[in-house]
Length: 388
Image (cartoon, rainbow, N blue to C red; front, side, top):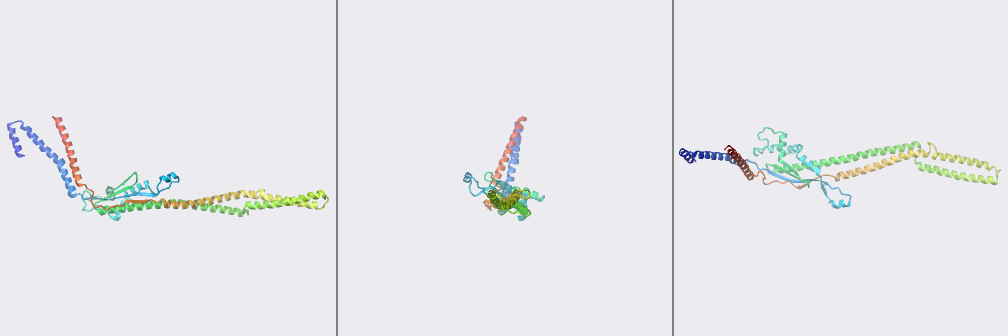
């Protein structure tokens, strides 16, 4: 190269066109410097990092789904189309996913596994460990770090969740994955208990209210019977009417006798006695009838209030029976509607680091830098052409 430069300067003294050669030489040197600066140097840096510094990243993966007992269709067509077993619960799937990504889940795992210390170890490379400069190791900063090592994808069609946990050791990745599944199952159990308590509590309150109303209605009817000396108005009125019928029969007999005596023995002394007897029977009949269909103290008047209280008592009894049946149904429904976290793929302990992809990252760095260099070259050529 030095001989070439010396020949260029020597020729420049002989020929003026050598100045152009000197300019081309300088441009070539600048071009190589730019190429090394934009392409070679970054590629070498990334090759050193991924080749000797970057820590291995292990990924533990599992798949699960939140299910609940299937509600059977009452129609024959629905029963034909539905298959027996369990159905997925879409809303609860997202609830479990959000909980696994929440601060509460991180607090629980961190308190049991001391994740902050595990991800701050010195054997993890500087750019990958948590808080490498020891500036801010707060929980909020670790939560941001946590969201980068946990990935939960939900298939919108099947609602199957794919949980991936990243760590710098196989066992730690597996332990985090297993701990998150345990927390998810605990949350599902809490949701089951809460739903069961809510359903049974509402039904139990209705039973208690129905029992109180039934007792009050029965007590009101009993007090009315005692106050009115009335047990069963229908039976009592029937007895009264039977008595009236008997008296009317006697009255007919007496009137028959009177008719015969007046026809054959109009001067008989028994006529006045029979007339007196007929009048007494008439008064007794009226008295008995007044007890049945008379004024405020008659059975017919008492019957209205008695029937109202009886209907109210019967209604409250039916309400109590319905409430008890609803409570039993609520207990069965609460047990049947339990959610289940079904593990489709169990957590695995990775035996090979999937990341970083060292060769691919180095090649990608080289290609990106080469593209940037090409863009700079195009811009530089355009500027030179514009100046000329």
